[in-house]
Image 1 (tube, rainbow, N blue to C red):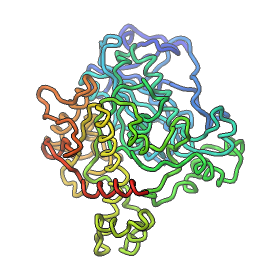
Image 2 (cartoon, rainbow, N blue to C red):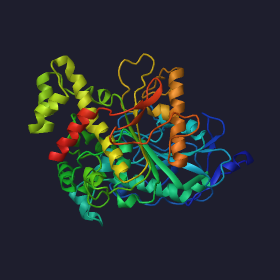
Image 3 (tube, rainbow, N blue to C red):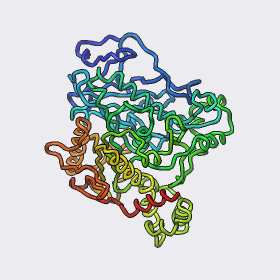
Image 4 (spheres, rainbow, N blue to C red):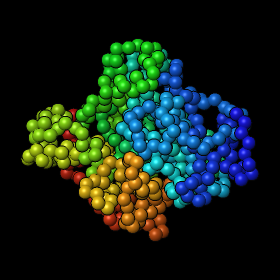
Amino acid sequence: MNTRTDESSEARVVRTALGQVAGEPSLRTEGVNVWRGMPYAAPPVGPLRWRPPQPAAAWDGVRPATAFGPDFPQAPMPASQAPSMSEDCLYLNVWSPAGAAPGSLPVMVWIHGGGFAGGSGADARCEGSHLTREGVVVVSFNYRSGLFGFLAHPGLSRESEARVSGNYGLLDQLQALRWVRDNIAGFGGDPRRVTVFGVSAGSASISLLLTSPMAAGLFQQAILHSPGAGRPLASLADAEKVGASLDADIEALRRLPAAEVLALMPKVSPKVRGLTTPRVMRPICDGWLIPQDERAAFRAGQLHAMPIIVGTNADEGTLLTSSWPIESVADYHRLVETNFGAALPDALAHYPAADDMQVPQQVAALFGDTQFNYGARLLARSMNRLGAPTWRYVFSRRRPGQLDGPHHGDEVGYVFGNLAVGRGTQPEPFDAVDAAISRAMREAWVAFARSGDPNGPGLARWPAYAPAEDEHLAFEDEVGNGSRWRSGPLDFLEGYYDRT
């Protein structure tokens, strides 16, 4: 490929290990350049479907990097700016301040969420221009999810040198981080100052990578938004059984069109998620990339010690359980008994529903605590025990007219400074309070990326995490301090896991 560039674009041509790429000025913010759609691995198609990511091919000349790469096949995502969906999805994007000297700035690598079934590095809520203006290099990327990223199958394990399968999406993430290590200096980033940050599945991925020997040295700090951490992990054997239930050998599955693979998802992903039991269509404990159950690793202190920020939103469950067919007290009791067994009375004491009207609220609270709040506190306590600087937050700001929430993921637009962008195609309302909270979050996140400490001149004082009081910074209508967020229910969950 040979593409001429004029003088005005010379500063935006960067040489990577694979060849030169030409970016362009951000249309969102002056003083920021952006490179989109750069390959960090070979297209995982054909015989490379369900294999670890392979090296991307080099090119001659200058490759335009002005359009996002495709998203992986998934349900439609209105907020994505990707031009299409395709298994050929392993591309990344870089935002950098114009004129940044090579290797001079801290790097923030965003890992998108999506429940390990959807999501995009081209989500408009996570467009990096405003955050980059604060003096960092921002990276986003796509990784395989759903069946494309997490299918385990006996046939795949047999053909693997490590005798494992699944976790391909996590391997993609490691490959993207290696690309950052090897190439980011040319875009102005310091590969020795990499902060990974993400939301939901992206944050859960970071939590898992903190326990993986294969991630050692690829990042030095982490910010985890609503991590699905500390949940029991499925074993390789259990995940292989689910893969085998598709009743097809691997070569037959590899020959299926991507749309037919996507259509298989309901067979392996139940509508109502187990709250205390392992999920299969997500990362698993394979004994290789993920050596042991995440909670056991945390409790034993077997994780990469580093500065972290970890937090959750005030209402993590309402949005994600709104379609669950649990409407009566009897339905609710069955759900709780299925997940807590003999601990049913204790569970109902912490999550009581006296009538059908209270059921949705308690389902949401139970979901939020088991899936997000418990893991966030567990991770904060585990890092603190290792002596690593740790900060915790709770995001409670509701936008103008918002009657519940803030929901899972609502804080993302604040961190990136993209307040007008919603989950769909309609803009979100915001006011001066939202703008002030957004500014405070961006400044704290960038201060942390620079120094490993979110405190700085003009910023609200954020006390380091102390387990005795579970201190946190509260992002509400104002920024202030709080403590012991949902401590009663989380203490119950801690005791339940200790006994099982």
